[in-house]
Length: 577
Image (cartoon, rainbow, N blue to C red; front, side):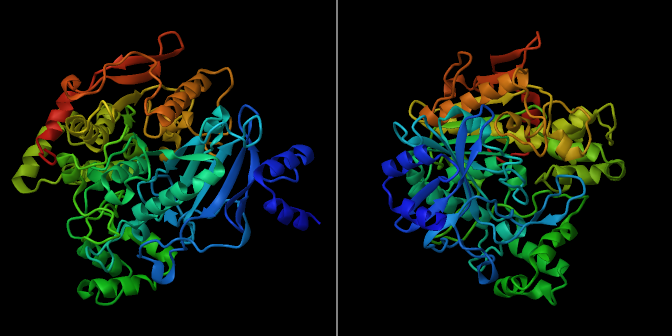
């Protein structure tokens, strides 16, 4: 009987359906959205932290499973279904081994190209006065790991406001997402192309959920920030979003420098899998052989390609593709930023103080790895920093860097651990942040497409350092700690944010800042700031600084402080301009 009732509900118009649901209640009326005739999605109702209800649609397919001959291929749109698709359960994560955490295992599936949509309920059910702004979040994970599960990226804080529709997508990771042979046999950037296809799905269908297709904000953190920034540079993504928030990541960061010889790396991938004659295989032969390999074996084999511990963390990364209609990136991101050939849109970007803890923390808390580093300090550290200089130039620069950060010492210990974190922070995050914001104000008309900067230094009760190190050692405000106040993470922090706590106040401030930017293209200014423009860039534009106040309270101030001596050191490499 319920099956027949549900079929009849699909045929009702929207108002009739809402009136029916008000009569029978939520038990019978699961959230239902039809994106075209006879193609509907059935979701589930969830509760936010303030008891406000919202709708969740899990596991919406946006592309075909990238398996078989679709492995190492461009994504293809998902097959259409007939009737109502059950979107009440999460789908498997994209197959991965998260080496950023202690004792990682290979988990997930190749069949993973799905997205989640969350929408609030208004007082009248779904009869919003006008379409809601849409926020699309790209998850973290170094392009080799990550998830959109609500146990780590819960939507409750955004849904509590009733102001936006939130979308999160999964995308291919590691070699499956970013391996390239440097030619059209395997052009690479598949993970970015997955994201683009997901964004196109949102553009075409989010209106059916009550979203505004002309007000889409793309935001991401860490690898998600790299991705969001890459979409600002790619012509393939133009027009699919209207604003961007880039948190603790950057398209021109050293860990995203394109591989110099992609075919050699692809052959190495084949070699560590014991594929015969790997060093002489053509691109087509490599792709053919790698498609035969079990996905778990392929993912696990990346560990055999590391030079130290789990480094380089980002082994498979952005590719410079041959020109083709489906190419995502045909030029080095540095050159695109340098020339100002990026998509000029309202942009918000920022950092946390100890970004480098994402890698340095695991080294500092692992005695075996730390000892190995100290025994080979002058050989390993320049590689960890991914310094492009070679020969005498490398030796000269590294001596300067070692003197700057470690007073010439060739080891890390309890007295200089902060400097060890700083060198990771400055190299991978702060220096590219400075260069890209400088380029933006040089090229963009900031009166039309402004840029807003922030620094998040608030130290609350929780830290993602717990995930990176497996310890409770205090490393200050580290990489990902801003996410604690944007997404609920019961898997990491089961006790949550107490209602009357400073942490909860910080959450309210940060969510409001992000949502105000998504709504208007301008974040809530808690303090007065000068407009970020070329003439005010000295040494950088003013930014909003979120931090702890002197009396166990929260302070949001205006600052222009930046570690320019360190930035000038890294400028000596002349990797940018």
